[in-house]
Image (cartoon, rainbow, N blue to C red; front, side, top):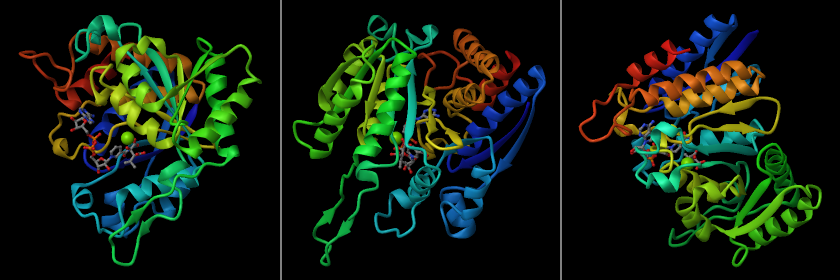
Length: 353
Ligand SMILES: NC(=O)c1ccc[n+]([C@@H]2O[C@H](COP(=O)([O-])OP(=O)(O)OC[C@H]3O[C@@H](n4cnc5c(N)ncnc54)[C@H](O)[C@@H]3O)[C@@H](O)[C@H]2O)c1
Ligand SMILES: CC(C)[C@H](C(=O)O)[C@@H](O)C(=O)O
Ligand SMILES: [Mg+2]
């Protein structure tokens, strides 16, 4: 198969982790007889520096022309530490998601058996964890208007908005996923306080009638934040709004041992995008120490999305072998255990395909 992948490496550790993922993809192509063509494009702070725009039109065109997009991470302390900056890398990420129609972000949270003892949580708590969080990605408080400050700058405001159709379409993604898994869906909201959450709950109750085989429950987000680390094996599919999903999944990454382990797929329109859930981890940039597994596993999701299931499985098996052999970066290394570099981990995973 001929595959065109748009490669948006971005900032910080972005280029390092994306390089390990393409190393693994190249090995897959060689072993399974595919041809992969990469189309690199600018995004984030790197794009601001080069052309003054965090998501240039040319990058958008490269994404639209590709079979799939592989995204690293964006973000730079020079913007994080300047709340008054007018142009920000994160605006590029949001504009990209919106303009590509990527309204559903699938974030699997599963535990590789060999990592049970490396999780900061007790092995008996985390064993059996296997859920997917479906995070709404193009609505809610991230996109609601008005957003801004009053004239004196003494008052700031954001707006959380959802329409029924925005909620319905992401609910259908989550219900269909539940049907293909253990048929359990947890709708996470704050319906005891927020009107948008009440619309979510009402809409979910209605859509649920179309999926009688799915057991649905409703959980407030504060309780969910606790239950996710108290009894993660309880969950099958979680569906929630943009900001709740962002926060809950960084929290959930602790179950898997590290934020550097969680991959994701953003879907909705024609082209799908695959990215680790973590950010540009600027403290690690250029040091060859970041965990590349989240990006490598995102590449596995990309392969599976293109119907290349055996290839995706081969990548997961190779990751599993690396973890079982203790070929891990410092975030997962036990005290006294030798930590491997980003590129050593990528080399090892590629060698196991
Ligand atoms: N999708 C994205 O591109 C994305 C996501 C989150 C944050 N960001 C941006 O990234 C920048 C840094 O944000 P942050 O520090 O809050 O979040 P971050 O996810 O970059 O890092 C948080 C912490 O998680 C750990 N971590 C993250 N990735 C890791 C990896 N691959 N290997 C090992 N450990 C890893 C590190 O301990 C790090 O200090 C900000 O500019 C932020 O806006 C971008
Ligand atoms: C950088 C930021 C805008 C982004 C988000 O909140 O969506 C990030 O945290 C993520 O999870 O991809
Ligand atoms: Mg996040």
